[in-house]
Structures are given as C-alpha cells and as structure tokens.
Length: 249
Image (tube, rainbow, N blue to C red; front, side, top):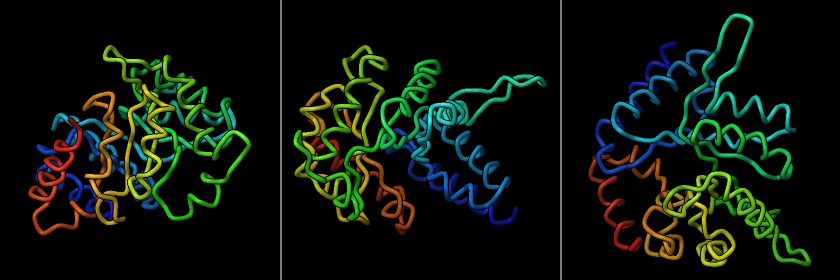
C-alpha cells in the first residue's frame, strides 16, 4: 500500500506541475498493475486528478486478444460490466492503446467499446523500440508489415470519426524512426498519431512535422522520463509544448 500511495502522490505532483502545458496523461498500466490492487487504486486516483485538471487520460496497456477477451478489455478501459450485483464501472479512460497483431476481429470489440463510450483507440503500427524492425518492418509483397497495420487502422477510421475529419481510431507511430511518418500519414489520413520516443529515447520534435499535415489536432507527443525526471518538470513540459507547436503548424 505504501508503494502505491507513493506512486499516486508522485504522479499527481507531476500533473500539478506540468499539466498546464499538456493535453493528456498516458499512464503505463503495468507500472500500476505490478503493485496489486493498491496499484489499481493509485491508477484511479491519478486518472481522477487528470480529469480534475482538464486533461485527457490515455491508458497505455496495449491490450489485444481473441474477441471475447478483447470485449472484456474494452469494458475495463472505457466501459462497464453488467453483473448480477449491479453495474461495475471500468477505468473510464478517454482512450487506450491496443495491439492489433491478432487481426481485425481482435480490434473490433475494442473499437466497439470506444464507439459506445465516445473514446479513442491507438493501435500499434510502427513503434519506437529498436526491436520493431524484427516484425513491424518485415517486407511482404504489399509493403512492410507496419503498412498493413496502417491500412487496418484506417479501415476503422470512419467508426470513430470526429467533426473535424480526424478519427479517434488512432495509431502509435514512434518518433525514433521519423522516416516512416510521412508514408504512414498517407495511409492513415484520418488517424490521430500517438508518437512516443521523444526525449529519453532520442526522438526529436523537429522531425515530426509530417504527422501534423491534417492539422494541429492530428498528433499527440507523449514524454515521460524527460519531464518526470527533470529538475523542473513544468519547464520541461513547456519547452516540449513550444517545440511541438513550432512544427505542428
């Protein structure tokens, strides 16, 4: 319990300090789940603090499974579960990350849950880790695997389309290999890009302009260690905000 309380306090402090320069938080669910039920309580506290501060919550759990289990994941992230004892609310996130490598039928229940909750889904397409080359960059007769994943994402785009032409069916596209961004934007013109890898992983804001070609609302740039570990988190967040604003127009 003490560890979970400390994590909750740390995260809420970062929200207080840096939140005014941000639009969302992206809690990594594993960091809370490893602490048992007190960790889930801490996660709820952090999400509530984000909501009170006017920030969106992107639950980063990279969920994905056979349809019946994917449906349960959707309920846990953005929905609720009917039981003989009444309705049980899930996390209530505004969006969540998903692993599409099991195919369209594994994504369908997650998109359905997001659609019902007016929420978003960010499917992994071309991630920021070095090992992405092992699978996501494998060549096929119709292009690399990450392009197949991009077409899968775009196929769900109209389901979660917003009024401004941008869809809540989004894609995780890493900043560490920016040469892929322009091509992936061609394949996913509606998708919001969630672009990890800026900061500690070496990605640079000035290389991300192509992600914003549909408009300034077309990409979200998360940063964790470079803000949470800074001596002045508020200044670090504002510096990144200004750098992103400069390339997003």
